[in-house]
Each structure stands twice: as structure tokens, then as C-alpha cells.
Length: 232
Image 1 (tube, rainbow, N blue to C red):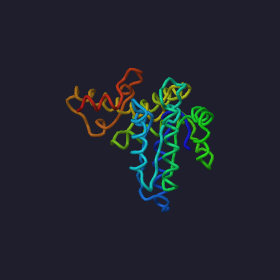
Image 2 (cartoon, one colour; image 1 turned 60 degrees about the vertical axis):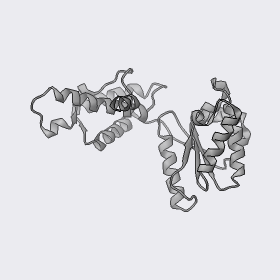
Image 3 (cartoon, rainbow, N blue to C red; image 1 turned 30 degrees about the vertical axis):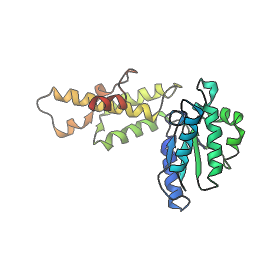
Image 4 (cartoon, rainbow, N blue to C red; image 1 turned 90 degrees about the horizontal axis):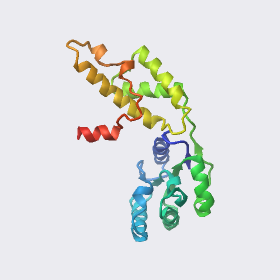
């Protein structure tokens, strides 16, 4: 069980866990089969049954990761979610120990689902791996790493502006941490490109530097997915 707030890195932690399990010979592949509510719950019970069984068949002798388990809770206005959990439990037992099951979700969400589906809770022998919220300073370091992976660096003013904004955002319950931060970095790189296009002469150092004015903190800014769709 991997628990934590949205965007804190639960899926990344799951990938690291799976690779470790493979390294120690506990599973046959370093790649898991991932699925969430939207991928498993169909329009009918039969469709959901087929989706769950296909997931476990694809994961033969490996790992199944069920993401955001709280979304399967019918109390959250989703239909047939708890029925899907019943099917997941049955598929796990049918695998007869050949598959390792990992679930991710918010701490409160996991607790509520486990209260309704104790048969799911009984599958897990260990306490949850709990990922905490990032501090503002940690988010700045993550942002710098994201930028550096694209060969960009922050100017001193940009880093200061980013830290101030992170201090505001970490106090908000709906901030998606690394997920929203990634969108900010993508927007900043795009804004920097637009800024530099207007200049006639630009040094390589300036070309790869993100300024405070490039940072976009507008909540309506485009997401990574929207930008990729435009590029396509």
C-alpha cells in the first residue's frame, strides 16, 4: 500500500518498488501492469469482469498496481467501483500467489475503502508506505531538477519567485505537488521560447535561462497534456 496526497509521487514510488522486487528475483519483470477506476470499470458488470481479468492475465508472475483506490468508492459518486474491488480480490486469489498486488491512494481514501471492503484490506500484510507532502524548498529543488533535465537553469530572481509561490501553494489542499509543478516548468520553457523569439541576438547562456517573467502561476495555464495535444 502506497499512500499520500495527490501528485506526491505514489506512482513513481510504485515503479521503484517494482524494480526492487525484480532485482531481488521476487517477480519476473521490472514492469508492472497499472490500472485505475477509469480503466477497469466498464459500462456493465461483464465489461468490468473482462477488464479486471485481462489486467491480471497481462501481469502474469508480476505486479498489478491499482492506482487511486479511493476512486472506486461508490460514495464518491462513481458507479460499480466497489464491485470492481470484489473482482480484483477474486482475481488476486485466482492467481494463487503468483502476482503481487500494490494499491495507491490518499490515506483517508484508502481507510474508507478498507472499511467497506475488509476482504481487500486482508490481502495486505504490511503497513502502508506513507509519502508526505513536499516542503517549499523541496519543490524548488525538484523544479530545478526538472529544468536541468531539459538543459535549463533558473535565474536568481526566478528561483526566488518560484520559492515564494511554492510557499503559498503547499498550504493549499488541492495542490498536486510534482504534477502541477511539472506543468509550471513546461509553461516556463514555452514562455522563455516565446520571449527569446523576439530578440535578434541571444547568447547560449541566456537562451537556456528561465527568468522570473517566464514563470506562469496562472491556474488556467495549459497542462502538459494540452500542450502535447497542440504539438500533435
